[in-house]
Image 1 (cartoon, each protein chain N blue to C red):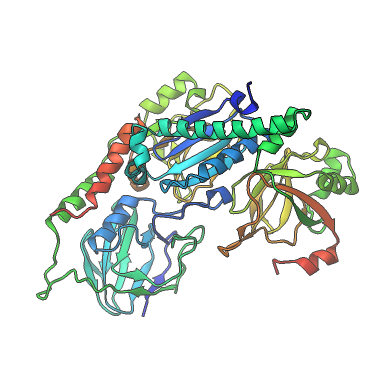
Image 2: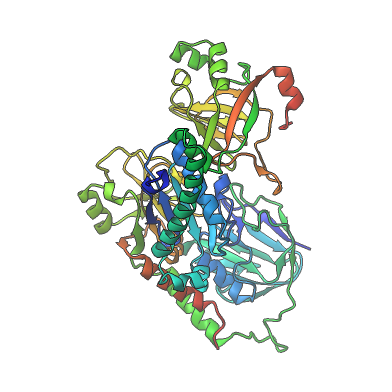
Amino acid sequence: MAIQIIKKGIADTIQDKGRYGYQHLGIQANGYLDYQSARLANYIVNNPINAPVFEIHFPASSFSFTQAHTICISGANFVPLLNEKSIALNTPIEVKQNDVLQFLKPLQGRVAYVAIQGKIKEEAWLNSHSYFAKSIQKDAQFEWEASEQPLFNSSNQLQVYEGKTTTIQEIQSHVFSTAPLQFITGPAWNDLTERSQKAFLSTEYHIGRQANRMGYPLKGALLQLNKPNQYLSAAVTRGTLQLLPNGELMVLMADHQTIGGYANLGQIILVDLPRLAQVSNQTSIHFRETTIDTAHKLYQQIEKKFIHRS
Amino acid sequence: MKTNFENTNWKLQILGDHALVFSLEEKMSEAIIEKIMALKKSIETFHFDFIKELIPSYHTLTLVYDIDLFYQNEIASKHNHSLTHFGNALLTAFKSAAADIELVNSIKKIKTNNNLIEKNSSTAIEKIIRIPVCYDELLGIDLENIVSKNKISIEEIIKIHTEETYLVYCLGFLPGFAYMGKINELIQIARHASPRKEVQAGSVGIAGMQTGIYPMNSPGGWQIIGRTPIKIFDKDPSILGKLEAGNRIQFYSISFSEFEKLNEYK
């Protein structure tokens, strides 16, 4: 009774909200790259919103189910196929024994989430199921205990709260909006030359090809400090904009190391990190400075969307 | 009377929308990391549920918080829902407690110098952790490198590396990787220009004025002078990291056969 990996993807893992409380020991937090889409998938199948899900990158793994489950795919659109037939995103899908789930091609976004209704039967490490470093291998098996909570009524009609439809639309349009990414300036922002500050705020950037769960390199205007790029290492967070010695920028993502010694120019605010996580290499991105008050308001607005509304 | 703690210039900055940084002068200094650890302990005593992490590193202490839990806590309304306000209150509480300790110490030890008072006022420095290292050239694969670059013998490198105690300034890079220092100038050496693809777990290395131990096999650029048979990091939640910032450690030299006997990586 398991979900089996029949083809290995390039970087697929299981992720939840991540593990906190151990960074002073050098243990990374990990967790979803796009917490909003991951939560959406859980929300749609009535799981606790921070439950573990499969995080899928393209080229993606293929899955085979050894028992019936209700699943939901959110986030990037990699054209999911169930037994060679396309299925919808952000919708509960019933899968039967021996069904095969594959992903055809990346249409939109760069990280997809597969939530399985119920509970993973696997021990957490330090309160989290999040993988770090290694990705899911071929033939790996995952036991999932299906939950009793029905999502379909007796005539096989989907029961969806009306409020849920609104949440799905709102989260989707937020995650895939092309508005500038908001950040709060960091300790080394004022060490940038005035020209570099302007360049960062006014020119466009692209995500480099080496992007992974540790960090997304940015391609665009090179930036300069008016002092050597050498700082005593201090803690960094997800969303930290690090200036590398060659003048390029790196945004630290979910698997980032706990401390860093390069110039910390600022941090992208939490609500905008899912948006960065989903940006494709072709899309241009811009940055805009914001305040902690705005960031907290936006964060709370998103949180409220996951509370059932009727 | 002005005390050392009152004279210390703490800086408080927000770090993005879910962290705060308390910092002192940007310097690798024993006195500074001791104060950072003392502040960490002071904040821990409050057991705030919204504090997710307290990460010390050299001259900074970073507090990571949960936005929702912060606003749900009554402390948020007490401080006008302002993290900066709250952070300053933590500093004030810490400074007054620290000043009390200092006053007591200064009365008790009127004859002693400032340096000693600072040590006594800190609870961060505990007993010395002793770590065995086999400095055989088969394991210390960069010893020869230091011999030729620093014009020093292997025996002298071992003597110098083991005669001093080192302070842990932070952990990072890998789970359990402790940055320790400062090492004697005579054995300081820059890291390799391009890192090795794999350094063996337990390897003890040098990079600039710091020394460290690789807790697991990993790519790495430090100059390797030996290997410890002791696991300094274990995934077992009851063990995890054996080293924390503020710990004082000392290496001691063991033979290859002792290394084999003690080897926990087998």
